[in-house]
Image 1 (cartoon, helix red, strand yellow):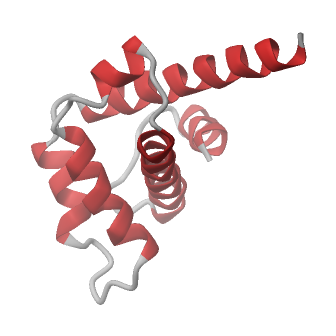
Image 2 (cartoon, helix red, strand yellow):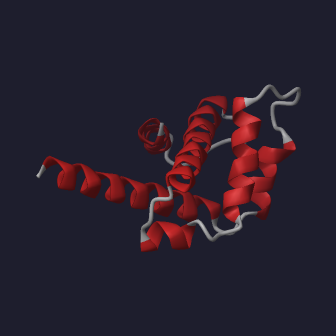
Image 3 (cartoon, one colour):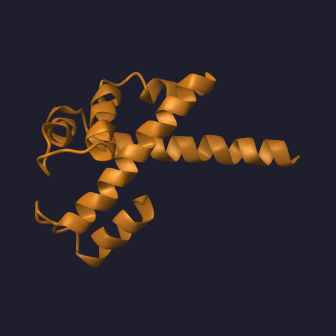
Length: 116
């Protein structure tokens, strides 16, 4: 989803209307799926200094609420949980990208280690 989101941004010159449904869908799925990875990380009690530091952010709880807004029926398309993450979160876009990259790095290193 992140790849599709980035491709759409590049194609549209990063000028996004608030009601651009296609971009919002990709972004929402990516963000919600990222929270599912956080849930698994915590349940498996995995450890990584960078990831664990990023997970100390108040954004995690806002992302949890965002995930619920995405994966559960909402009467209103722009549910308050979506808007809270964007309005109240601390630097949410860079935080999501950094966390996503940290998870990618961690799991690629894990795959390399298992393959040896």
